[in-house]
Image (cartoon, rainbow, N blue to C red; front, top):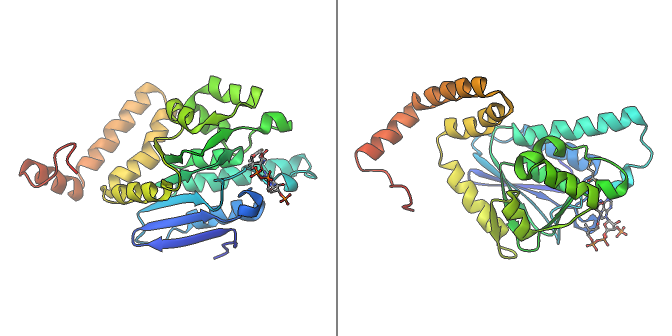
Length: 258
Ligand code: 1HE
């Protein structure tokens, strides 16, 4: 497997920890790194149930490595954007849910990578921006599809029109991150969430990753039909029957019990 030095992958029981490790360049994403992410998320080892993606150093990621952008022609540019789409599809529609733990800069392509994950935990130092507008370019890693679903079209357009920087607190109010934690506590929180997610029935995680986004992208009538299908499939699995029985016979936790 071709994993570059700028990615560190470590398995802790059922959790895969994936670290972007290019701190001298603020975890800017060059081709090697995006291809490495594609490889890692295409080849999740058997037994892994959830992944945590985070960054080394002071920042999650400064986005696209701008030093590689200069001399591309139009076709190369298209292929480059499609390469990002492919890699981020592997994160979003891979085999396991991915928790992003973000801190410092989460900008441009870094924000696009975090948007492809399933849950985002932000440390207090996090700031978000889409500097593409200021650099004279446009997002190319899927932000126009994923980001409006998280924060809304108007907010994304504002970020690009004005170069506005969003704080960690604003990020949570806007719906970009789901958890806000103090500095250096992100990984601990990310692992805690990953452990919780790993305890779910496999079918529930599968439906949340692969079916829910398709329902959201479809019309109401098709969406409701897909919901009926997946809820019936999920409820008929032996795991669901066991869990329902556990609750009805007093062996399972009540809502809110930990
Ligand atoms: C980089 C990059 C990069 C840093 N490409 N080399 N992204 C941006 O427009 C963000 C550009 N970066 C920044 O605004 C700042 O670097 C940060 C706010 C993220 C961090 O600031 P700081 O003071 O901690 O670091 P620095 O001194 O600016 O950078 C340290 C080194 O990292 C320096 O290299 P050095 O060789 O002079 O030490 C920087 O050149 C390098 N560096 N960011 C290349 N992005 C799929 S399309 C997505 C399109 C985009 O992502 S566009 C947004 C690009």
